[in-house]
Length: 145
Image (cartoon, rainbow, N blue to C red; front, top):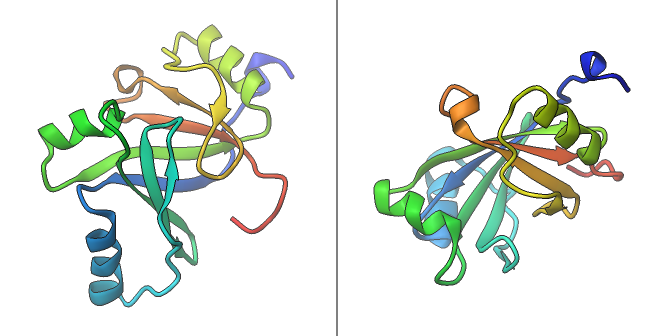
């Protein structure tokens, strides 16, 4: 695929950093009546514990620091109550997406690695994206997302 042919796929999820994932999940149950919430899982390679709030139109990923070197810790120091951390879009091929993003002048923050959905991901620096941290994830090969 040529660079000019590349485009984002669907919005997959919005990442929300929280200081207490259990309390945040309970908030979504009590206030919004959402019952389809996954159990928290640790992802040590990313430095997070995560759970997904499943909505008819996508997901909200709750992320809490896992370990002392979690990238979420610094975010929560600036935003103690939590807040929107990133927006995630799907792409067909993460390696191609990384190459295209670099060619287009984006600052790619990491080599492709496995994310919470079990597929490769990369992050794009907020300075290139109107202040928004963007996660690109390879579209899962299954259809339960």
